[in-house]
Image 1 (cartoon, rainbow, N blue to C red):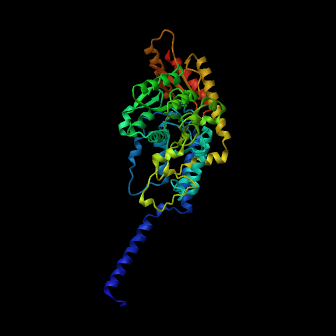
Image 2 (cartoon, rainbow, N blue to C red):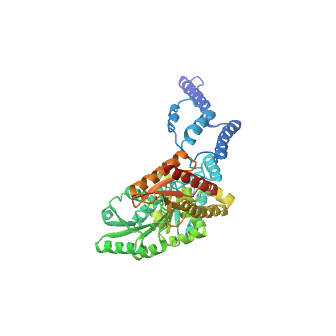
Image 3 (cartoon, rainbow, N blue to C red):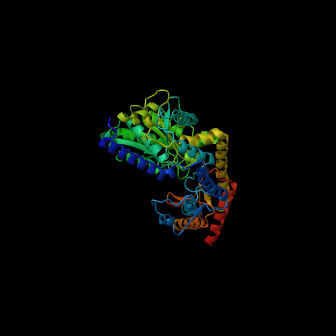
Length: 497
Ligand SMILES: *Cc1c(COP(=O)(O)O)cnc(C)c1O
């Protein structure tokens, strides 16, 4: 070869320039891989902030109304140059952590409170650092075994057989959607069948069921609202009558949806009796236990939810009754093959991801392919501390609900039925007040409590009555927070004059 071949020389020059450029860009992107000392600095700054938060929880308001509602966050746009960790954390504390509901507070007694145990945060940290590809067994056998093991543990709590399968989803809504798509395909329903397909549920079922049916393309399906007893629980006799009538009318009874803990009042439908009707009529039987599910760790919960083991599918939200961070829902299907039939896929670019029958891959059982390694946030707290403290915290919540109900009644409130789980409904009903006046008083009590902010409460409408709710579900909610709630309520009643 000729050393001074001009064409060769040009190629070599071009490559030197290319290598210079690569080096330059690598240098400019170095911030993406901080060295040990820099990592320590970032970590320290962050954990200092999270420590400030946790240590301050006792004095932070459970609800912080602000005028600006975090608009200041937008004053600092994303730009080419970064602002550094100190300023970023300052923004985070001021604009994100402070305003709105402080959902980490034990004083969070509104809606369905979530709470997130510390170990789960460390699990998330580890999951993000290793970024294991948790969708496929071939890629991350340990992560997949972990997810399947947690699903199996939950299936055992529910009482499902060995053939059961499931998916660790992002929450109850997606979990319910997954179950509904499975039920649709398991019954071989096609577009032409939808308008005649009947779904049985109560008006207390969560709205995500409605939403899931629409997303599943089944917006035309007929929703049959089954009458309830005086405790807002589905009446199995009424269900049986409705199914029989629809069948006589030539319609297709398809899906029965019971709730194990409704969002409004925490009512648990009579799951065992409903199973008799659903199965007797050849319907798919789904139980939405998004709120109540992990109360199965308690004896009372097992009793209240007896019959759940006879369902075809069920949903439990670890980000509710298992104290895990938001973004954690479980769907279980009694026959894994049916879940797989609705979700398995093939693609040429996946051809190297060998299918290994040892463990089923999450990607074959859910709409997700790439997924957050969320099993780790669930596994770490459970494996480190065991289930006993979780069960104890849930037992405590059940008793706090009873305690609150007794005390709030002693304050003069009219209370709803004895709670099936940990939700108490109550209402201020002064003698001689009209429905409208009583509604206005209860609204005033709630608004006053929100302004006070020491605890966070919410309300609902039950049969046209503005009704107050208290939900004990955070692991940080103890008797102290319940006493504070009672104090706030007493003050608000006094303020009514
Ligand atoms: C919270 C809840 C849902 C919805 O779950 P997300 O996790 O919020 O998506 C569904 N059903 C019931 C009974 C619930 O309490």
